[in-house]
Length: 210
Image 1 (cartoon, rainbow, N blue to C red):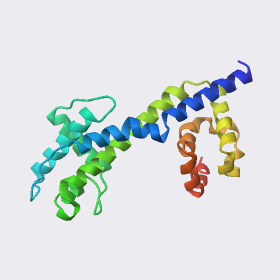
Image 2 (spheres, helix red, strand yellow):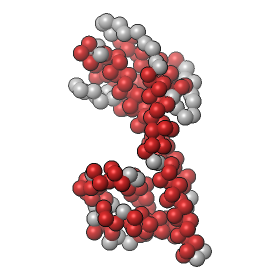
Image 3 (spheres, rainbow, N blue to C red):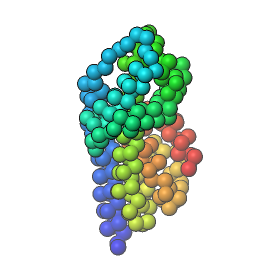
Image 4 (tube, rainbow, N blue to C red):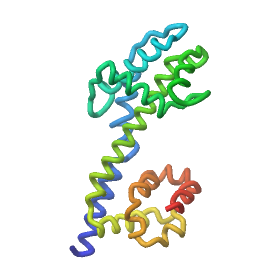
């Protein structure tokens, strides 16, 4: 394949990837449906909140979001939704006083935090983050992983050309093959020029870690 053909293929991949991970697209595809499903969830706030109340609300909330908020709808059983809720809380919940499912239970009992409402909103954010990560992984896998080595090297070259003003000399001086295996990390940093400008110093630090 001629070099011009490789560049054309690489440019098409770059355009498609950035369209699929555009922030507005992600908001429309993931954040808005999950947010709308969360807003439509009705629960009964009890006082005090017992552990049984807490687990029931959290698991019912997860079942509701997975059925109405995810792009690929899932209908969970009672046991599945309970297990998923506990996993989400244990691995992803961070409240003002601690992290994990037990911290979430304590927060749900605090009237000043609006109890369950606060915890459920945090759970929705964890689910959004997880859905975004899965989507990005799919994009990178489907669009980049199957691209040939010359094409991946050309993608690196295109990215470095377009974002040259924001990149450190260290990265700009790296040969394309050295970065070709780090394309997902590189694209995650470069995917929003606005975010890049806001975090330029931090970006250089991350990129220097390759």
